[in-house]
Image 1: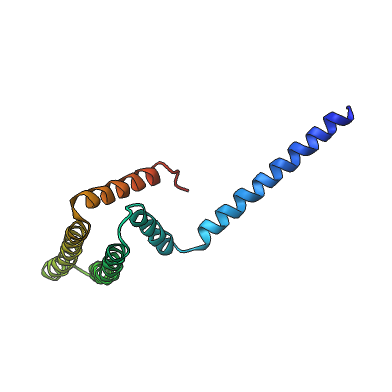
Image 2: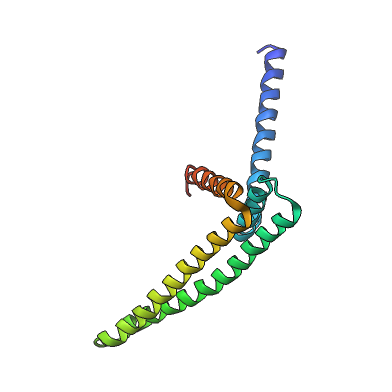
Amino acid sequence: MRLTTKRMLVFFSVALNVGFVIVALTLVYQHSISHRERSWREVVDIVGRLDLPADQSQAVLASIRQFRATVDLADQDLRRARGSVINLLAQDGPVDPAALHRLMAVADGQGRRKSDLFEAHVLKLRQLLGDAKGAQFFSLLQQHFKSKDKTPHP
């Protein structure tokens, strides 16, 4: 093999190795932060793309932050209610239909509460953003979700 051919092969080998290292570092960085932090950064980025005045942007982010905290509590309540249903079903012996019905009603109520919280939140966001910016925000959010749906899941 000629010297120039060997040099070209070494060059391409080094270039591929550098590319692999860059991709690996990027993946490690992306997965080093929690899903919650990554999703918050994505929301902040979407709000930033709206070109809102600083006070309006802060009000929107504060509303989203408050909603996330409230929904976290609602999620805990819903998990607890569903856990109670599972605990009842996991007990030995016959299942008391009335007790199961009561526990299912509690779980259903928690699910409705979470849906109601979401509905109130999106209406508040539309109010804070106005019609044009609100539509743009939800359009950007929709595009973001569609682009995430196209990524392969491990």
